[in-house]
Length: 141
Image (cartoon, rainbow, N blue to C red):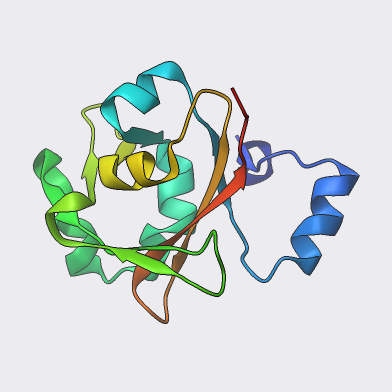
């Protein structure tokens, strides 16, 4: 199967807004009930490889083998003028048995009061060697 078949689909509006947005949130996720409860985001293999692991050294990527947790830093850039960093034990990336990955980030979920239907964006910033997180849309209950 060609690589193009795996690329996320975007409508014209999202392409225009992406061009103006200084943060290229390549991984976009809609929050579900399960994600709110456990504070973990499942990131498919392709997205993890294409948008995160390609910026890691081979030794860093190998550290994800055998379903080990790898602690990563995450910058919350939702409020662009006041970024907040989550790191250490509060945020980790882990490879699942089916080759997908999950990002555990319960403190980040709680600090935003994320709820079902909210949309978030993530990308790896090679300059800071950390994930960048942004709340893209918040559904008011």
